[in-house]
Length: 186
Image (cartoon, rainbow, N blue to C red; front, side):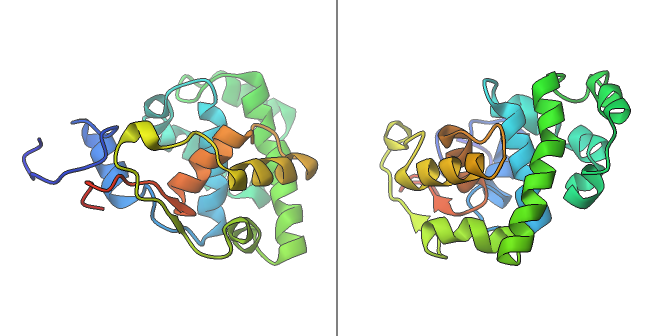
């Protein structure tokens, strides 16, 4: 147990960056489109990697991708993306880097259709956080029927790196789903 004696979800461990992320962000409802886009970029970058790898590079991503502003990102040229691919502060995967611009375009279209991305994504959980009361980390699923539906719809709209597992992680991170275990102080 840590110095503060708070009981947290088992995945947190003793790493300060995980403790801060868990205590202040994970599972907190997000209703800001820029924050949603940030998590789409970060969760997409994480695909096949550890969340810790991405979390530790978050500030570098923020700088490389214009504060996660999709309206600025859609203007990125191939030259700028190639420069980002040389940056050791981000995950240098060509498909993932180029998908940020593609996803920014799709994101803006969703905003135009629904008034906000927030309104769109929250519709997949009926507008309110789906609260689960898992007893242990082993019970927490990697996907749900909601993440399957969201993933399918986003792919149809032109997004990439939005598989069901990635979208479930996004839903957990942005509070659409509350997967804190029952023994967690959160």
